[in-house]
Image 1 (cartoon, rainbow, N blue to C red):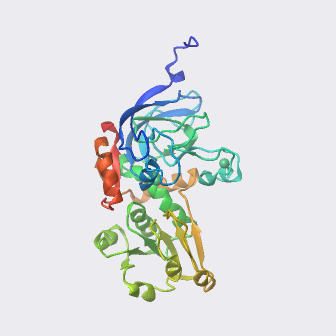
Image 2 (cartoon, rainbow, N blue to C red; image 1 turned 90 degrees about the horizontal axis):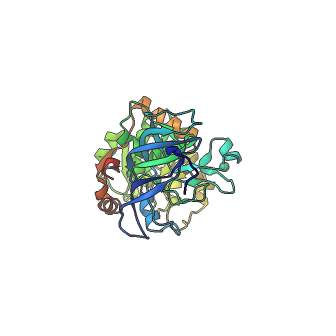
Image 3 (cartoon, rainbow, N blue to C red; image 1 turned 120 degrees about the vertical axis):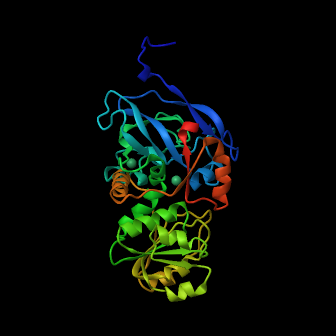
Length: 359
Ligand SMILES: [Zn+2]
Ligand SMILES: [Zn+2]
């Protein structure tokens, strides 16, 4: 039965969680097992967990076969409650965040360069949920009361940021910060953010704080007041053909957060010479792009996925300095299914965050 040890840190723990038992099933209260605390593991008392649109895609198996039961959640903010004997970076009481991955190979060129999100190792990136850990067991995400994770994959949340509104920074935040930082959004640069949802609203805040001139390109002017309040200098409707003729050749960088099928050739035409259109929203099907607008002006079409550990920490520190958090609607765990329906209907300002004390 036992190895004769009574050390509680060597035993697994059963924790409360909200899970889907099979694809498209409503999420319901359950329990899952967290691994025993290893030498370099920390236990996080989860305080808040954001709802990302990709949670809904994965529960619905839109992106491939899922691992069930599935406990979604990769925008996690909490407090360290316990540390393994070899942990050096954290102590009980530290405020920490966990994003989209909880481990990686640590040896490939990308991992060594701090670009863990692009890990090319054999086992590759270990996703926070709907993944398989290096111990061979399924991973369970943040819609839960506690998480056991290697200390190297947790990030420090600055004291100045409230944990609830900081949670979405771990996915929505870094997803926008990384391309804006990589392609040099800053003073003298004109940046467009396509879509003003959970991702887009973070893009507006970051690009504005970095000093760029920010334009929101949205289907309609419905959220114009919100966009300007968040820091946009301009707000234009993409349903108006004049937007594409008047803004032709004007942006250094466009970040597209929309996963709907857009006419990317038309958006490429909005770039200046050497400008870049970056995809962070992922359409379900391949898109068709004409190379002509790229050739005419040496424009680029690229993509970007979340960020590595060093850049995610840099983003959190930037948020601490600039007072940036997500705009959130805080919900109880028993409201998750309703929140999913509202996300699908585009009815959220701008991110749902679950109060984990209600799980
Ligand atoms: Zn996400
Ligand atoms: Zn790697």
